[in-house]
Length: 491
Image (tube, rainbow, N blue to C red):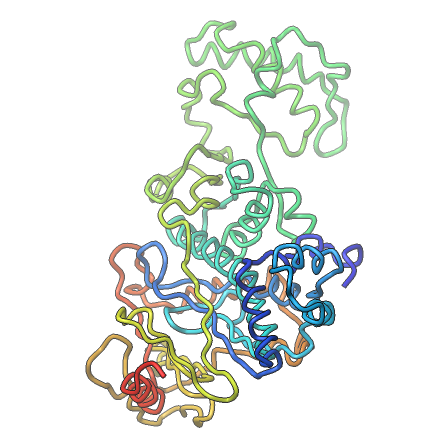
């Protein structure tokens, strides 16, 4: 895709956004004659972020865009040649020049899906050398996007459906790429818009904003508007001298409040007049440049109120309480930096090579991987409630509604039986042999899907503090394979 035809392409990652060891392993695979060997990796996380019981899958659109554009340019190959051993065979670099993702297949959770530990966000299969090279960029594209979407979803759950949430964290973000990602995926997670203009241009995120104290403090009160006349909103009738009207109303308001007519800062008044003349149908008054307490008057209840200033989950909960007069809440640092947990901790692990399952064995049970190419399903009760997610080998027949299933919950010592009323497959085929299989949903569609997904969580799982953990279970056949490979030990 040409960037000028595809605005989002300007934000796409490049092939060398990777770790050096991916290139050294690629050389090792090539030298061993294994570059074209079929392999499959899974990208997943081990624990839900922020002490919660869910995450939202995000970043798929960026991954697909990256894969379809993946190609090492001459300058890329020349740089790799400069950092790899000088005796590396030239034929390896010719192999790199010819690489693309035409042999890569991707299955993934749709963006906005509920995601749980161990369930793949992405399954990536193809030639071993290529899918190994994809590890770091795919982790980079998925991990932060999913973390931001989940953080935004938590903030939306706290705020409730009525309050408008605006992401305003670009100046606090970890660089331009982090800022654009945060603006994009906070919108997917449930925010109403962003102050980030580039996110609006490239990603279609609704943009909005207020104004800064610098605008107010730049006025002294001596300024004379070049044209103080304002036309009626209805379009009929004579124009009004806004500056003169403000003087009249200021006297009335000050008399009502028991203030001297000069007590309000004259520069503040001049700034408001200037802004109203520039935006007669979208006026905003920044009230706390000099003092905010004098504006606590009854008639403000009929005026839309926006607030910001280091709002975190606790402060948001206070602002969202019943009876709060706040309409719009701007959040910056707490959404873009994810201070409660700055990384989702996604991993990308080999699960099969040459048609044979592979498993990482370690003393830490949490870091042991699940072997083999797998399918994932969500089991639901008769009322549509989520029961648990099931991982099974891809070769197994899918579970059926009404069928009694014997499953092994992860971390449990005993099996359990479940009879689901409904079964939903989780992983969809998005890219097959380098070709897009179906159109990707728009960002707005993924945002709506995320809100639908969250609405299906039980209150116990949706609870943000000390929630009940959602179960992920293995089929009997997958559990048996795990037990067999554990018994065999490292080979």
